[in-house]
Each structure stands twice: as structure tokens, then as C-alpha cells.
Image 1 (spheres, rainbow, N blue to C red):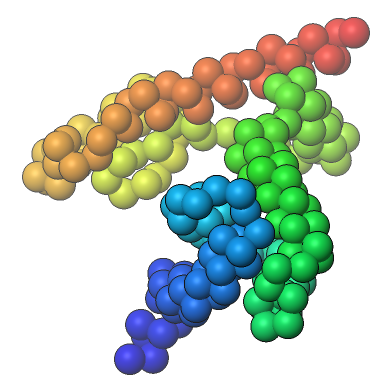
Image 2: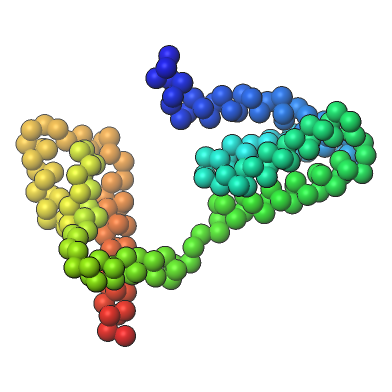
Length: 199
């Protein structure tokens, strides 16, 4: 039982179950302060807002998760004491807009490619400055997860798996495509780094 409780998926399931009564409170607050008669609006609002704590915590946005904790507390207070007051309407307006913005930023505001490359180039520069040799190995064996610097090394390694009968092609998914993506990224970084040195 202890092994199950310590698993990450168990914590997520437990938190989701605990959120169910909170969703009911949020649905009520929205329903009492909305011009819409159809309750499904309230359910979408409640599930989105109340799952925000779980989502932001899992993603590592602990400060944002804490802000949403305060928001759910506010929903509980409003539910108990001010279900149809102006405070309820203000709370809904703030939480709805804030949730849309936060989710959009979390899932779609990726770093620009140039910023990503700049960070990697800085790592390369530090390695060279301190005379640290590091062979990058983007090509990964899907069977044992060992990595290699090029496809020739990887193919030789895979031959060993095939000879011993430890190769199960149908279980690995699109592993070659993933290796190609990593290899392309490494080549792009090397080109950028070379241009950086010659600039």
C-alpha cells in the first residue's frame, strides 16, 4: 500500500477527488451570478478554475498555484456568505480572465528559438572555457536507452540486440523520428556555435 501511495499518479488522483466538492461550490457561485440559465457554463468554469491548482502544481508553478488556492478559498467564502453579491460577480470576472491568461501562458508561451539557442550556446562556451570535453549523444537506443554520438554507432549497437533476440521493433513507436529530431537540433546548435565563435 505504501508503494502505491507514494506514486505520483496516486497523488494526482487523490487531489482530483478532493477537488470534486470544491467544483460544486464554484458551480453554485457561477450559477447564482450568471445571466445564463444553462448550467453547463458553470461546470466548465468550475472545472477549469479548480483544476488550475493541480495543473500549476504539477507544472511547477507553485506561486501561481498558491494564488489559485486563495481564489478557491474566496469561492468558498462567497458560497457561504455572499452567494449573490457584487463580490461574487467580481470574483468570477477576475478568476475567469486570470485562468484563461494563465493557461495560455503555461501551454503556449514557449521560449523563442533564438533565446533557446542562446542558452545552449552559453553552455557550450562555458564548457570550452573550462576545457571540458563532452561528447553529445543524441541517438538513443529504444530498447536499452543507451545513447550514441552518431547513427553508425547506434546501428552497430542495435545489431547486437538483434543477434541476441532482444529487439522488439513494434514496441518502440516512432523512435527513429525522435532520434532524427535530436540529431537535427544538435547540428543546429553546432552551426550556431561555430557562427558565434567566428563573429
